[in-house]
Length: 442
Image 1 (cartoon, helix red, strand yellow):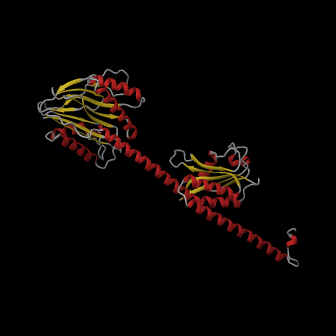
Image 2 (cartoon, rainbow, N blue to C red; image 1 turned 90 degrees about the horizontal axis):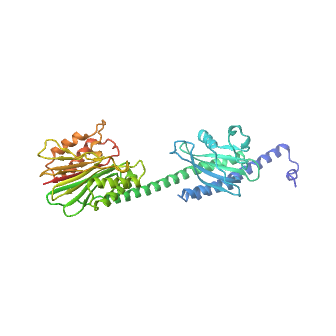
Image 3 (tube, one colour; image 1 turned 120 degrees about the vertical axis):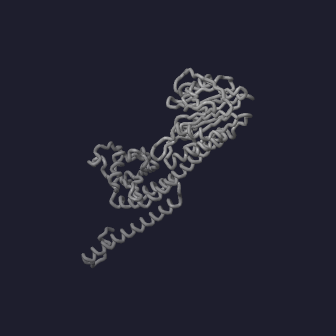
């Protein structure tokens, strides 16, 4: 029975037109109810999950069902990338066996610029995208933005109407509603995912900081006739400064202070490598220069060309009161003595560790007289800058140390760190760790 045979007899053209309009309105309302039911189901489905991948899979699959398309993909915008059109394809779905499609960079660039729905029923013929090499299997597509607070967070794209016809305005409208409804949920899940990633990273950094702290001396050595102390304050959670006290035998103590290149986790790993390298040489009864030479070779072999370390290494003979040392490119330590008006620099040694192979490191020895004070420090002390950009400097350090030589070793270490931090105030640090070691002979 055709449409005309369904028309009641004796109906006027005006009544027939009204009846047709009523039927169309009924179809529109029916479609609207179906869409509302669909959107309500989608809201419940994605609202019950915080898993980003699961949410996007649900959105893509429901979108394909809603507008009868063959493939779909959600592409999230990488907001941290230098190129704003760089994207991260996070999920796709297909109802056929063909190769999955992905939005090309020109299409994504168009979406970045316009931030509005786009229907292409003949993409190969569209002059706006004449430079695009479309996959021959792409017949039609709809692309809609995922927008949160006016910012583009991603793009939802569906490909190829199943019935072979093109996508309609109703398809575009419904897909745009799906995108608008899903955008905030997807963004919340993405932020939650980033938060979880950040939490895991922070936990790893916390564990790394604990491991690094455990590598440092827990207490200073207790040696008759000597007062020894050391402390390091990392600029970040973990640092690249390293100090150590290692007992060699009853009369000899190895002590060192180093600063490795880089900051954060990479520096802490290199610091641990340096510590293991130094400790591995100490019991071989080497001179200070030989220890530096071997450590230089080992560090050079185990790190890349951009990694290096400065290190002051010394062996204190507490019976003879002799300090045998080698300085591998580190800030010069100083010995303050009542018998000398100016402090003595300990410079002998060589270049930084890990720079050149087979470098001949030199060493030297000095005698510690009664009441002499040895001060070793890292560049985070002298290079701490105030709000005007003025470094604390070596001269201020020498004056500060000279004025407080009466303090115990631990008190002098704390005093130097306190004054340096006061000098810097609230000025953002230059990522330099602060490390100080003091050795006093009674």
